[in-house]
Image 1: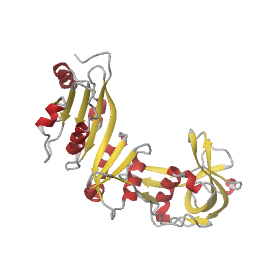
Image 2: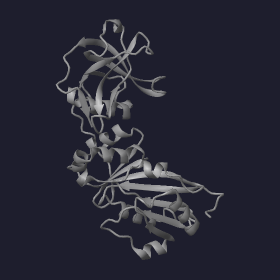
Image 3: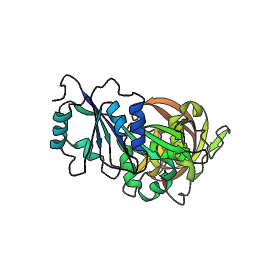
Image 4: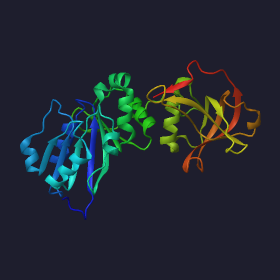
Length: 315
């Protein structure tokens, strides 16, 4: 049996075929990331074009098994635990499988998912996001990190980042170039962030919403003007509301209303679910609704407006 006095961490590496999962795991092992673990078990759920080097696995103390979807069961995992007595488990997961399979399958005593990473081939992302959005979305919702590899300067990496953050606001995102070196991206915003009033067009609401949340220090004290739908709630005080937009993250059934708390003296005159143009100063404060500090708007003007041509925001 595996050594019961220790937790057996599972490192879950997910991603579509040809995303670079095998290379990522191989390079991680070769760098000595798990050198202290004398016994390592690699469970491969998908055999891609790139194969693992047998000598590399042997030199790094790795036992490898390949499992089909039907074999990925509690009983099989217990069998592997007894046979290999692993100190650490790496799983190259099949990107077409529902992540709930590994998350919800009962595991041997001590086994627990320690870190989950999704690998994305940046060259294929636009096509996959268009045709397989719901599948990609599921592979991101449960992970700690998304690694985009094979990136180049001409790609809209800011859009890729926002799409992932819309699915999982806590996820860490890493961009790597074709050589595997990390890239930093300069966010190109569609509005003038240094203007006296930052005017956000209807189609750019999602970009503003994500950026002000991630970089509050850039927006603190600035004035913004945007169009949003009023959301009043009986739990809100009579002096605040949320002006926001409906966001579609992966499909028509997966929508959410997103916006920030806004204080306004004339809230009683606002129609719930009505469309308004809001001009407000951005502050960064603790709010119980956020359960932490976050962007808070103090409106100087809230004027009736026509609904956007498309009421949804897309990431």
